[in-house]
Image (tube, rainbow, N blue to C red):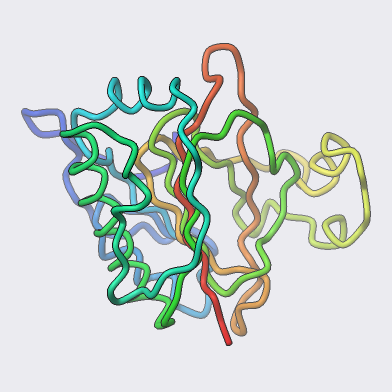
Length: 229
């Protein structure tokens, strides 16, 4: 589990807490933590949350139907999440559309861009097994179903090893991860907002897709990336 001050109320939902300073990253159950990524010394933030309520079973059934993925660029300020969830039944479609609209607004507030590249759909492979930094200014990742993204604090990363061309993901990851360093794991519902490799003020946050297993064979994943002129 991520290191955080989490309290539960009588209904089981997490209660917002103040952002937790920890090296180059921040985490909080409060949505306002997303603005922390604009600090010069921060390259990753985690908004810890549960995501839309009551959708897990319906989302799993939707994923089993092998729906098409969405991959396209839209305007941030008037972006419509409708096409991303068009194949979902109600009330799942409405709940997911509201949640994605919330994340679009948050991403627009931080990135200050005009367009965003969106990808949304079912992932059945470990497509990004090697620890890496994305070649964008900002990227937001949310896993709605299945294991969440794995990421490294800056103190855990050997940047020299990242610069070497090591083809085997296992060997590359072993070289990139410093001895005795900890790999952090997001959980379903969490929102990761990261600076990428081309951000002018910081090194890109290092992360990778989690290994899939028989217990967790699929993920439902949403990513947002800045699109710059």
